[in-house]
Image (cartoon, rainbow, N blue to C red):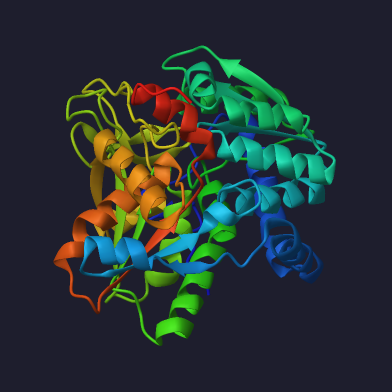
Length: 398
């Protein structure tokens, strides 16, 4: 039985629906369509077929023996979402929501993207299912993620640069919401993380929960036990919610979300919502933990990873944090870049900079854990998209 928010869309104290009246009708339509899809055997069969034959599921749970031996201590396992078609976990949700859009008779999907992986996944699903596609992306993120911009356009998507604000993910979501308000009848907003107004946090979590179900079963098959620690990076929180959901009922398994520590603790130098100036507030239709000043203005953020610099976090993760079921920590840019190289050199796997934050935390704690302990790291994406930015930051030439 999947956990669910209450009837008002709240996970404990967080969540809800804070949107203009214009969006209430499409949100109710989406909630109804999703409830029907959960009961529809044909829909579930079609999604399962695509997951297996198009996405490449199940993804492996890989024991990183050389990395573990080099670090000493706990054994590190990688849930290989980087091996999904398009190179990240985002395709799980994109395909599910794109199928829902067709069920609702929508001919057009819009999306936001930061690191570009969600945009690529939406462009992919739209091309597969014959949907018109527009993706909003901050111009700063477009600079950092040029390969993904090209991939989206190659698949027929219109990529719209956003010049407002910090020109990153937050601003891209603003533009996507404006588009949706104007075009509610034929358009579905394919939101990419466990954010936004109800029912989006629930829907995205459920489509990503396949990660945790697989990892749980794979680990039990290999070891007949449970891991000691499960680690995931946290921007909005889709990959974290996806893997954590299966392990939340098992309280002996420690769950850690890794936020972007950036380059310092001052406002604007990081994207750590559970540190510094964060407190609960409303952003993009949901009530959750948010980096904001004393006047309620959203604070700027920074991360070497374009996918982790969002100023808020999904409401279910906020609830898990309040209940102490999930703990949160930060990894800075330097540590993430170190883990990017460490995994590439020890295992021949180049992680996304987002995922490198989770690898860095595992590398930090593994040596102090016993040899019989086990850590699962959700490797949410691959690092091809980040090579230009890593080279720029490190002063190298490709």
